[in-house]
Amino acid sequence: MRVWIVFLLCLAGKALTAPAEEEPVVEEASRSVCVCVCVCVCVCDLEVGTNPVQVETGEFDEAIEVVEDVVAENPCLNHHCKKGKVCEVDDSNTPMCVCQDPSTCPTSAGEFEHVCGTDNKTYDSSCHFFASKCALEGTKKGHKLHLDYIGPCKYIAPCLDNELSEFPLRMRDWLKNVLVTLYERDEDHNLLTEKQKLKVKKIYENEKRLQAGEHSLDLLAHDFEKNYNMYIFPVHWQFGQLDQHPVDGYLSHTELAPLRAPLIPMEHCTTRFFEQCDADADKYIALEEWATCFGIKEQDIDKDLIF
Image (tube, rainbow, N blue to C red; front, side, top):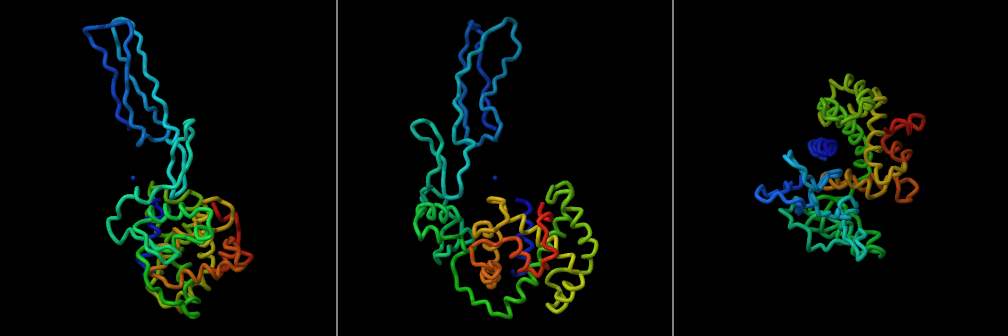
């Protein structure tokens, strides 16, 4: 998550969240042979691996038997549901994911939480959007509905051909600078893996004189030709960051959302750019298509650079 916070900050700057532990009470006045301990546990906030029942028997002068009531673990505790769904248990106490009622979503604090769907409808929050989309699951409308961008729906000007040609030039330069920024701030924060740091170190050392957005497009174009190798890894890195659900070598509309959604309100060529990247129009962007969009040569496209 820290990676994405830094990433979104970089993009915006360039225009473009222990259970209570109750010790068993053993009355000193009545040291009976058997003591029943009833422990109330809130499992909602338990972390994975946390034992909901923790009893300290202490040191006693004489041995006693401590009997604990068995607290059944909530089956939903470690059962993951995708956005728009919540976990419930059936009659046999088996967890299952069901669509969330939009009315149960927290009230949005303001317009900054609103999102726009591809149906050009403004939703109070992403929670409201995904709950509404879930209710349409299995329908043609639900299949086509996606989160378009962050913020209320608004008019977005068409992207002209000359603007589209400039967009990937700026994008690849931003990706390079995002990695440089992460490298600079990565002191014991694990923003990048050691293997990634080794790749970015060379870029960082050659990046001193350049800052994204402070140069003309002509100079950026010249820089791209002169320092072509500086852009190869950042483009591959970004593909790997997005290809997560599942990791299959293709980017779906949902996987692209973390990058598209914040960008569209600021960059009106974003949608057209990603549509163009999907060269075979199969609704998925392969690594080869992605790299080509950013001007990476075919011989430099390498799946081993995604780690």
